[in-house]
Image (cartoon, rainbow, N blue to C red; front, side, top):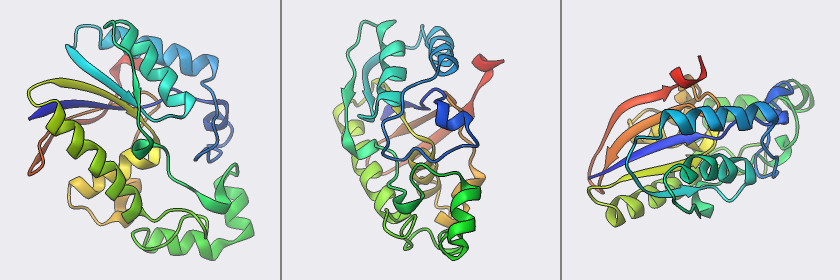
Length: 203
C-alpha cells in the first residue's frame, strides 16, 4: 500500500474574507498562508516523501512546493484534484449566494451527490470519481512509498466522505483546516485512515 499525506493548501485572502468560495479561481496564498505552509513543511521535514502532487491552482501548488523543497522533490500537478466547480457560487460568500438563491443551497445540502453546486457546477459524485481515480493511480504507482498530495477543502472532504462510506450530504461534518493533514494508506481495494485534519503545527 502507499501511504499518502493529504493536505489542504494554506490560507488565501478569499478564505479569510468570510470564506469566499474560491473554486476554480486561481487565488494565491496570503502572507498567513505562506507562513502556514512553512510551518507544515518543518513539521513534515522528516517524513520520507518519495513524490509530491498538487492541484494546478497556485494556492495548492505553492503549498506543496514549499513542503517538497525540504525533500528536494519537484511537484507534479494533476487536474483531477483541482477544487470543485462551484458554478454560480464562485467568488461569493455563502451569505451572498444564499440570499440570491436559497433553494440551490438547500438542494445541494440535501443531495450533493446528484445536485450541481451553484446550479451549473459539479456534483459530489463527479468530484469523488475524479479524485478516487487519481488516488487509485498513485497508490498503484507508489506501492510501499510515502506521498505528499496538496489539494482543497471541498475535494478533500468529499473524497474522505466517499472513502469512509458516508453519505455525501454529510461531507461538511469533516473539517479541513488550511494545511490540515490527513494520513491514510491505500491500494485499489482498501483504504485505512490514521488521522483526519491533524493541525498541531498551527498551534
